[in-house]
Image 1 (cartoon, rainbow, N blue to C red):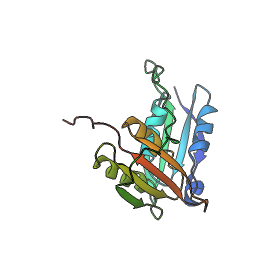
Image 2 (image 1 turned 120 degrees about the vertical axis):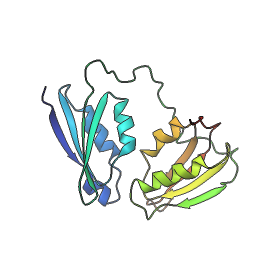
Image 3 (image 1 turned 90 degrees about the vertical axis):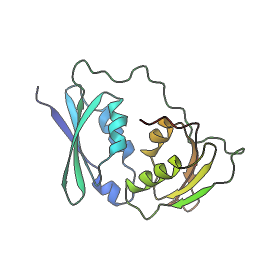
Image 4 (image 1 turned 60 degrees about the horizontal axis):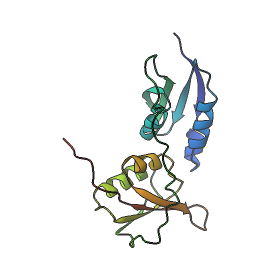
Amino acid sequence: MTQNYIDLDVRPILRNGGEPFAEIMKAVSSLAPDQGLRLYATFKPVPLFQVLGKKGYSHAEKEIGGGDWEILFQPAKTGQQPAQNAKAAPDTENADTTDWPEPAQHMDNRDLDPPEPMVRVLGAVEKMKPGEVLSALLCRKPMFLFPELQSRGHTWHGAFEPDGTTYKILIRVGGAKPATH
């Protein structure tokens, strides 16, 4: 069966410092069962692969030049089902931080292009001990970071600073890290 794709170019949003996650999810929710999404982005949106995978979409990606990417999301083949029984992620964005220790580490990632801020935050958190807190400054709300933190057992609190352009997130490292083989 030939796939019919709806095009969504989020490169202008990203280049202007915006967060396109809401636009992407709006486009995905409007797709007919026989439609896919052709997404254009300024980076390879690896966390989005997992988010849409849980919604029953597979993907194929290719770099199209200048650091830009084209990603094709299509409904998974018959027999593959989205994770229907998966628990909804709790809203830990507004975790109560009154009993949290002072941050053990501070990061300023405001001058970095996606996905580098997320990669650096996740790398730093993985080196920290359970219970420690990381403070990070970002230039946008990190929508792709949230599911990654959730899947790794961390909690967080985040909000825009009064300047309206800086997003500050506090991340409390969760329990024991999974064993690696």
